[in-house]
Length: 229
Image (cartoon, rainbow, N blue to C red):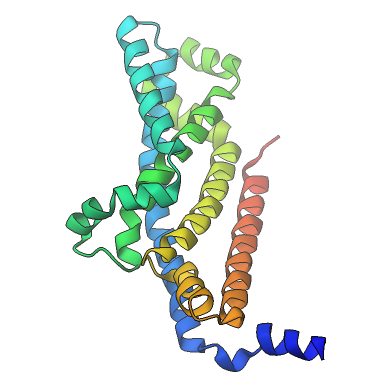
């Protein structure tokens, strides 16, 4: 009898709407992909700037690095569920709506870009100084050092950072769903938790895990292929 109760409560797939689940999965992927495009661009540039300023010995560069570092740490430290509430009005003015997958994208970018920027900075710091000195000795320009030395040498770490940030982003999209961001997190809360439909919550959770496992697998393969050691 206990087993029957468990099955009825948690495995009643007749209470799952395939179309709603499909749309929620699409919304989650939409939020993740669009936000990550901006996060990679902004995070890379910010990380490169932090790295460049940290290597510059001038007092002005040190002050700028300290300011950027503090700002980055502040946004990385704010819990995402708090940040999305703080940026709700800004998101509404920027994208024209305060609910749905599109409305969650600005807060996702603001939250994840500083996080990835730090990973980029760390990746650049781990590049062998001897390689950089050799590039200087050959008269390489700053752009040549960036595109021919820094990026190729740190590519495994950069890709690993993208993988980690993307997985973190999946978690953020789930939290965004609680306050109207849509996606699998929103479906799990609105159709699952709020209506005591545990099957929807379970299926949405499994789909999120599948997405995370796929991203981790693809990311690991890309890191292995880019690692020349």
